[in-house]
Length: 128
Image (tube, rainbow, N blue to C red; front, side, top):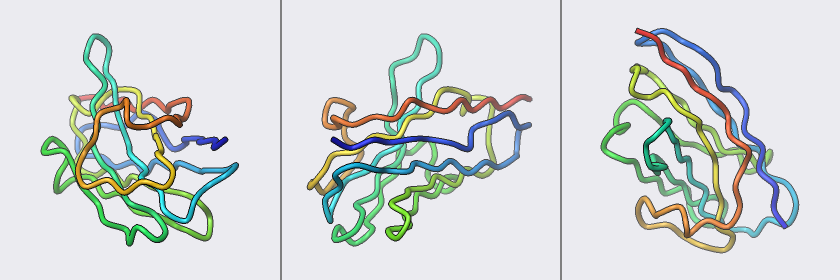
């Protein structure tokens, strides 16, 4: 099993920044695809960023809605993936989840059903 724990959410004003963390524990493979999803009330869960960790070389992919503002990165020594969010907008408000697929490389933003492991989520609220 693999456990994921998110942290770093909070409330900010438009234009502010937050950094989310996703700490992995349990059985991890040398290569994993780790993704960040978000979900606002009444809206389908949206994949926004992925990274291929470890042997995956750190390749990243972003949804158009966050490209240029959000950066996904990894710290392999800490088994942690980060999401740096800059220039936040009210439409970025939602619950943010990290998800992982062990032993898999992601070539783009995949749908949520690709990922068997999920964290509990962390709330991000951006006020105007």
